[in-house]
Image (cartoon, rainbow, N blue to C red; front, side, top):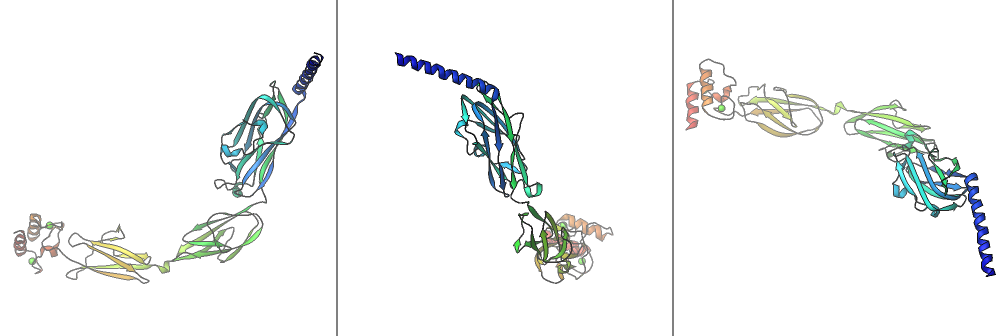
Length: 383
Ligand SMILES: [Ca+2]
Ligand SMILES: [Ca+2]
């Protein structure tokens, strides 16, 4: 019995101590939370630790952390937090507006967080492909949103906070080389073909060499290099933007001409040339500045049969001789033989000027005149 009474007295004494402790917490608690500073290179996945010191009897935690989403990019919510301390298991994380992370935690059982304990890591991509930080800056602060971030005791009293902000910084000042290209060709940087902006962590000298594409010539540098020197040295002491221009080498282009006649070696001056699918004005027979290569062409005229051919333009100007075949009897050039051709021939014979009129088609017997004989021959075709 005496033992039992002693036990109750001890419990009462402990309860008194605990209540005093709780009263002290209400008035005196202060704590600090800190965001780590991390060095990184472009493309690194970085964990930024958030630690806490000076917290006991913590029941609730609301934390808003902002960051520059032009330099840091959250990977995804599940992977953003990789090391949640057991004392705040059950915390809920959310990304707000793409550039702010909210952490909320509510415990039925107030906990004491060991001093210097890491609460969680925030996981980011530093300078993602979407955000090439070398061009837009080399650091991203990661900061508490101070009017929203707070710890609360079991009695819902806010604990005074001291904030220590951090960030993610490039290991060294970065220098990016961007090359813009006009025309066909390529540029090598220290013998490696350039394809996308290059980032350098140290000041260094580079060798840029321009290689014009087939039938192009190098036409010089502009931007942070100027002139015609090739290859050329470039000192990367800051971000550099270089333009390279390649021009088409017109001396490598050739003239393709068509000489179009009919079966009587008379010039046909109003045929239509379709060259590689592109139709040109009637009578345009000369084509300047063509690259060597394989072409298809058609020669079209209502009074003659269509020509469709292919050609290979080599390293010289070229003339294509075309002799068009007529279509005897098709006086109106519509591709058919019928009474309309009889009417057209009769109209011509009686001194009118029918249009269209294909004289050589109408002159069926090829005696140099269109008359009744040709009409009789035409009607003979119908039988
Ligand atoms: Ca006809
Ligand atoms: Ca005739």
